[in-house]
Amino acid sequence: MIDMSLDVTEKLQNEFTKEQKQDGSKPDTKPLVALYSHSYKNYDTVYGGFSTRAPKFPPSMQMKALLRIYRRTGEPNALSMVEKTLECMANGGIYDHIGGGFARYSTDKHWLIPHFEKMLYDNSMLIEVYLECYQITKKEFYKEVAKDVMDYNIRVMQMESGGFASAEDADSEGVEGKFYVWTKNELQSILTPEEYTRFAEVYGVTEHGNFEEGGKGMNVLSIQPGFSWACKKEPLIQSATKKLFEVREKRIHPLKDDKILSDWNGLMIAAMSFGARVTGESQYLEAAQKAATMIHHHLWKQDFSKGKEVLYRRYRDGDARYEGHLDNYAYLIHGLLALYQADFDSKWLKWAESLQKLQDSLFSDSKNNGYFSTPAESSVRLIMRTKEYQDEARPNANAISALNLLKLGELNYNMEYQKSAKNVIQSTTENLIKNYPHAVAQMLVALDYYTDTPQNLAIEAPSPSFASSLLSVVNTIFSPNQVITMRPGSETPTGYLCLG
Image 1 (cartoon, helix red, strand yellow):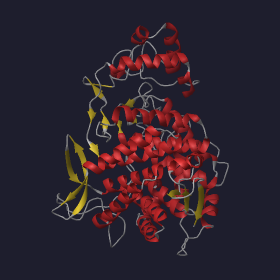
Image 2 (cartoon, rainbow, N blue to C red):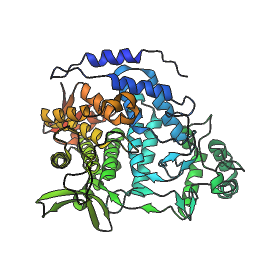
Image 3 (cartoon, rainbow, N blue to C red):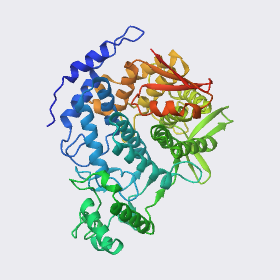
Image 4 (tube, rainbow, N blue to C red):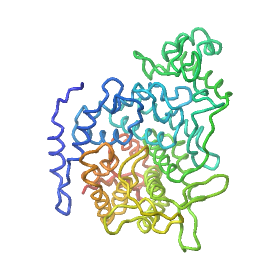
C-alpha cells in the first residue's frame, strides 16, 4: 500500500474553510474528503485504477477530481494514484499501440485484453485527463499520449462533414479483435529480424500469444514491464510500427458507427480545444472548429411549429433527428465554452449562451433545482421525468451543467449563473455524495470550481495571434477553475487576472 503520509482530511478542511462564499455560506468539503478516502481505499497499487477486479473501465471523472484535490492540497498520493493509472492504461493492451486510441474497457485487471470497441466519449475524456496530468507534472509522456489519441480521432473518427463518428466496433469479419492482433509468424514475415527482435521484446510477443479468444498464437500488444512509452521513439520501433500500420490498413476494418451525435461531439470539441491550447498545435483547433460548425449547420435548427431553435441529437446521411435531451445541451455547451477559450471567437460564446437559455427553459426543475434528463414537452410519452446525478460511462449532465454555469458566470460577469450552479450542486442527493462519492466525481469537479476563488484572466490584444506567447505560458499551467477572455487592445498584449 502507498503511505498516507499526510492528513488529507485536515488539509482539505483547512483549504476550503478559509474561503467563504459571498452569501456567507461555508462550502461543505466532506464530499471531496470522501472521494479521496474512497479512492485510496480501493486503489490498485500494482496496476492502477480503483478496483482490483475485472472488468476495468477508465476512471476519467474520478481522476480529474483527484487532480483537483492535488492542486488544492499538494497531497502526493492524489497525484500518484492518477499517474500510475494513466501509465498502466497507456502501456496496456487497452491502448492501440499501432493506430492510437483507447478501447472501451479492459476485460482483466491488468489493462491487457480489451473489449476492442472504441468510443468517442471515452477518448475525449481521456485526452483531457492526460493533458491535465501533463500540465501538473510537465512529463512529455502524458502529452504524447493525448496527441496520439487526438491524431487517431482526426484520422479515423472525424467525418468529411466535420463531425465525429460515434464508435468503432470491436469485431471485424465476425471475430472480436481480429483487426488488432498479431501472430509471431506474421510479425516476422513483415519486419526485419532486428525490428522483430526489439518489437517483440518491447510489446511481449510470444509464440503462444495472450488472446485465446482471437485464435491460437494471437498477441494483443502491450508495453512490457521494464520498458516505457519512450521506446516508441526508437528507430527500430518506429519503423516496425509504420510497417504494421500499413499492413493493418489493408485488413477489413471494424464497422464504424458513423452517427454524429451532438452530445458526444460536444465532449470531443472540448477535448480538441483543450488539446490545441496545451500543445499549441493548430490541427486540433481546426478539428474542433469543423465539428462545431457541422453541429451548428446540421443539428441546430429552427422549429417553426414551436417558434424557436432546437438542438437535435443525431445526424446521419443528411438526416437530423430526435430533439436533444439534457446531455446534448450540456455537453455541447461544455465544448463551445472550451472552443471559445481556444480561439476567442465570440460566436461560440453567444451560441453557448443561447443553448443555456434554452436548456433552462426545457429541463430546469423549478421546484427542487437541477435539470431533468428530458424536456417537459417530449415526442415520447414518459410516465415520469427523471433527474440523474451519477456518472456512468460519460460524465453526468447535471454536473457538466453546473460547471458550464460557473464558467458562463465568470465569462459574462453575471452572478445569476453562479447562483444557478450552486442550486444544481446542492440538489445532488446527500446519500450519493456521502456514501458513493466516486459515483458523482464530475459533480465534485464542479464543487471544486465553486469552492475555489473565481479567476478570470482578461487579455487585451488585437487578436489571439498577438497574444500567442502569453497564451503559450498560460496554457501550460494547470488552472482548471480559470476562464480566459480576450478584448481589443494594443499590439503589446496585457493580461489582467481578476480574482473573486
